[in-house]
Length: 576
Image 1 (tube, one colour):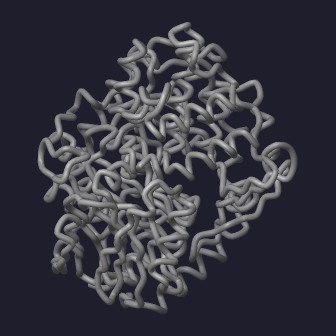
Image 2 (tube, rainbow, N blue to C red):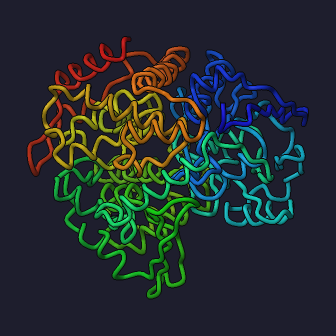
Image 3 (tube, rainbow, N blue to C red):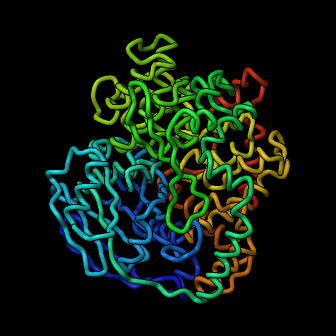
């Protein structure tokens, strides 16, 4: 089977030893790479009750058969572990330039286990594994750390992943960063790195995995570009990135605002895509092999934030700091984005927690917390969360203990301890099904089901047939994550094209039914992992507040009966 090295690298951080293992072809054929291989390994390697921040937890890197090839949208790696945020299954993906170097090091998967006695930097290449002391880097922000670890290794073209102070402090919403602004953001995997005293990993090498049909792959990539480069959706990403969604979600009355109490933000025009490209110096950035170019390097040219450069903000960062926190100044959102990146924290969880603090202020629970709209107070609280100091310490372990400490358990919005994305499920009910059933907690990326609901493929407010269509999207994107491909290619790569791409890469002529069975098995494994950790069917639910509190603009609500029906349908169709 082409497209793979057939090799796994196991690294023991405590003993500073490593060994190569063979990945059987039948496992690769059954699960591919990425999410399939990562979930299979996680289920084998991490047992019930493993402390997410203990030596028994592991971090698994994977790439896929598309990684390192000319396949468009293929420059992504996956990370898998037991989440310190939810206690369940954790998966996170990041773009940028790292993934091809993991593949070039000669491995399809890398398992990091144990805990180093002192801060450590790993160097992984096709020449072997080196363990570098990194005590002097402990405490540095992610930008400084990335520059330092690459300089320490001293290999041209090498790429690195690092954590910042939030990960070192085992803040449970800490993430893993690369290329300054790319993040394996959700689930707290930066805290797992921190618990292992691992500051970062540098990858380099020159190994190449041959594909089954290079001519077919070349023609596939060329045809995909010809057919899609001028589409309005692609042009929108190239011009605005994901900031274009701010206007769309406000027009749909589904833009979460003032900590989930409204569906429209009155100041949205100041933080939308048009305002972004008009008021800042914005340059498109792209990952290798991608023609969508959704990344936007923004520079503030005027005012107190002049000189600030950030790749972003993404829509999700705008929704949390703009909508939930009611901050209508894009330069302040950029600053909060930059602070999250430097300290190494997930913007989505961070913004939700700060908005919860603002809600606590508004309810008179803690007047020392920032008020809605207070960007300076938000920045102070953000730093305190990252450093576990002052008022921020109550939020550093995530939303479940924070809400309990503040007496806001009925107000806090999360699923399994992870906060949702910027699509209100009271309007987009299929998105609610996705939040409820995602193994990693409230997640929009398992199916990106906001797309068919916003574009009218299926009515937003219906529950009839929603689970079946959701599963079709989730199955296809599960194959994306097994290959690993960027989900922004979802409309271009329907089942027939995925079949062609897989045949070109691996030489295996999968049927659509085989791919659907593969996706269902992978998704089932993620829920089996959760069952092992005590997260069963009763965890596949939405916060009661979303059932009981209609949005004021439309009266929209998703009832418990509606959600139960969709989840019942979902379980039946999955064969659970």
